[in-house]
Length: 62
Image (cartoon, rainbow, N blue to C red; front, side, top):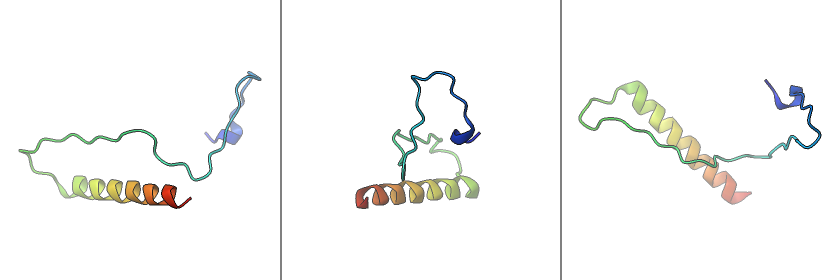
């Protein structure tokens, strides 16, 4: 559901649109170090790191 379509019936609540939002919570991956980490997991970790590093660089340059 898009925020634009969200119907808020309380006048005290407002929708705030963020420009270039960046992650604001810690992200933690937990896996067993004594087990094999498959290709899909390694690819996910790499993609997540790339995304977070990009978001941090973008936030610093804004």
